[in-house]
Image (tube, rainbow over all chains, first blue to last red; front, side, top):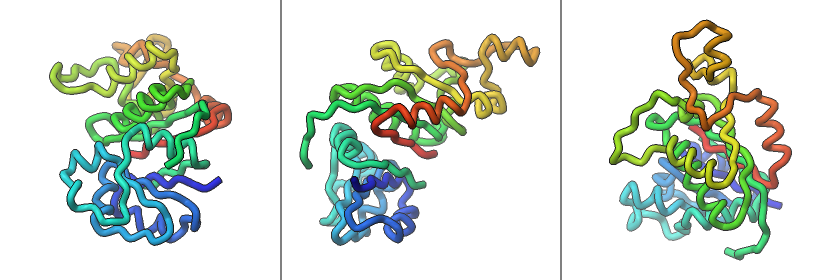
Length: 88
Length: 137
C-alpha cells in the first residue's frame, strides 16, 4: 500500500517530493496549502484540504493539478493509504 | 476517489499547542470526520506542545470555538481516551491531583477529561490501530 504524505508547511513540500514514492499521494493542510499555488506534482495525486484552502482565500489560486477535498475525504485518503507520514 | 466500506480503528497524535498551532483544531476536525464515517477512535495522544490542549485552567472566549471543549465533547460521546504524555505535561505545568501531591504544587491544572500516561501508551495506540495520523506542530 502506498504512503499518504501530509504537509502542513509549504516549505516542506520540496523535501517531501524528493523522497515520495511514485505511487504515493500528497495532502496539503494548514499553511501547507500555500504550496498548492505553485506546486507541480506530475504523476502523484496532490490534494489540499478545503477548510484550510477556504480559510486562506486560495480557492481561485490553486494550480490545476491540485484536488480540493473535504475532511471526510481526508479520512478516506487515510483509509486508502498506509502509512500516513506527517511533514512539517 | 473510491469510497470503501471498511471500518477502521484510528489513532491520532497531536503535537501542536492550541492557539499557537493549528494541530489540535485540525486533529479534532479529522477525528470528528472519522467517527462520523463509522470508524473508531480509541485514544488521542497529546504530545510535545500538544499537551497544552489539556490545560484545565484555560478560559476560552465564549464566542470562539475551543479545541479543548471539542475534544471533551467528542470523547464523552464516543468513549475516546484523551491521553497526555507525562514527561511533556510535567515540564509545562500540567499536573493532575496525583502529580500535584507528588511534587507539592499549589494546584492541579489538568482538565479532568484528560489522563496522564506514559510514552508506552503512544506505542500501544500505534500498534493497536489500523491507521495512525500525527498532526504536527
